[in-house]
Length: 210
Image 1 (tube, one colour):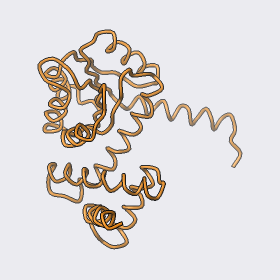
Image 2: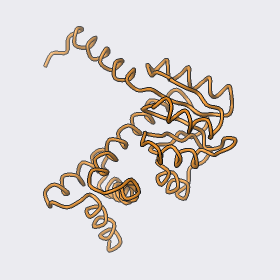
Image 3: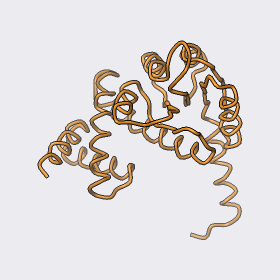
Image 4: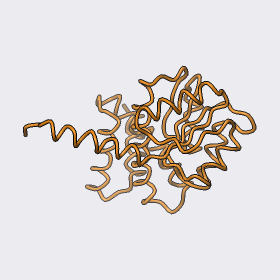
């Protein structure tokens, strides 16, 4: 296929339209960082629909504004990012990116349980934003497919934690990307007519024997 200038222009326009469809809500207690995030997101083509300065406000704004993406700091007044994410997820499931100074296994489990889909490690740069957003949106699509297999949100979140662990094992041992690891699990799920949770449990169990 020959890629012409017209095709490239069309692809660029499509990308801009897709980004504009995403309404981003940001929450950060530092005014300078809040403004930086807003400016960089808009430069990347995203629509920023709101900016909160504390955890309580971002929960209320998430319900009112119905964003398709939330980016917020882990440390905020009135309610921290983990608590705010949990409160938002209880009302509406939306991809959430958490900004944190450090990343640990303990925080990762708490974040997944609260409905967080990706991290940004401080200091946040423009270069970090786009990959983090793409990752959060991709994981959100995965979550939606998992949610269709279980009866309620709590089960879906528990399933996601197990699937994330299994993905990590496949990525490390088979040198796969996150997307390919999930696709491999999906393929086995469909072939064996089993739920993703069962496939993930089998991968985790097998890894303990090796």
